[in-house]
Amino acid sequence: MNGFYMSQPSNRVFSGVQPTGNLHLGNYLGAIRKFVALQESHDCIYCVVDMHAITVWQDPAELVRNTREVTAAFIASGIDPSKHIVFNQSQVGEHAELAWIFNCVARMGWLNRMTQFKEKAGKDRENASVGLFSYPTLMAADILLYRATHVPVGDDQKQHLELTRDIAQKFNNDFSAQIAGFGHGEQYFPLTEPVIEGPATRVMSLRDGTKKMSKSDPSDLSRINLTDSADDIAKKIRKAKTDPEPLSDSIDALKARPEAENLVGIYAALEDSSKQAVIEQFAGKPFSEFKPALADLAVARLEPINSEMRRLMDHHDHVDAILANGANRAREIASQTMKEVREIVGFLGARAR
Ligand code: TRP
Image: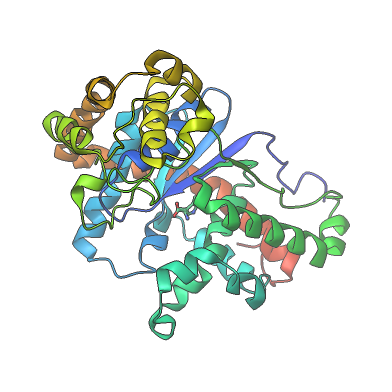
């Protein structure tokens, strides 16, 4: 039996982005840019999670468009789909299959504690989809199908990553006899680590420094979209809410000024430096000086991505081919894991498939 089990990769990254429209600076700085950086040190799998998207209603034609747009954003930002894997979730059926098994591992009590469900379901919980409730078990399946060790996410996803570890641990425990009996000894699923770091893990609204930048904010001035023109970007930064004080010379003093802190964080992330370095550069300067510098930097960073995204969206056969190729490579790993999981769980005929 030895050799039947896949060995655990030591540095595999997995992450996902929902194709629900309006990719913005928060998605870019909080997620996509980290995905790009991790390519240097890890084997990466980046997934457009269309199955997660339909936990709330998506217009089918829009879903197709948005799936291509997220893919285009990945590629335009510098993710290399020939060295790493880029695909959309629904092309690999094993995600749904493992999610079902995890639905039977996770406990109601665990899912009842998830704050994202409470926020998204709002007051009308009776009318939320069952999928929205079990969303985190599909997310755990995404990650553990590939036995990913590291998951770059925004800080709002921390709780889902903890749940993923709980599921892995309970699976490893519940089936320890089967897992060990097949000569695997150690835990079958790894306890995945979140990767949450950098100056802009939380990019806030440009209109209210206490709220996250969000695609669903009714004011378009609250966010910088990856598809915004240079003029729009400059205008939105010019109009961003601030206070009348010049920039402070310490990070501590910024803490009580959420709008100022947010803009400094954005600058630092775009420049790949730190809040401290930005503060040293701009201490005592008024926003009338800081904002144009930020606008120039934002345009310089985002304009090339924007134009490459537009080019890719005009050639969507190319984008579709990237996803199909990525899905084939993802499926090779996923099908191997599922074969093993079916056997571990006691599903007859697992080997034959
Ligand atoms: N829930 C994540 C979000 O909304 C998206 C996601 C789905 C994900 N599956 C994942 C992120 C797996 C990391 C790993 O941002």
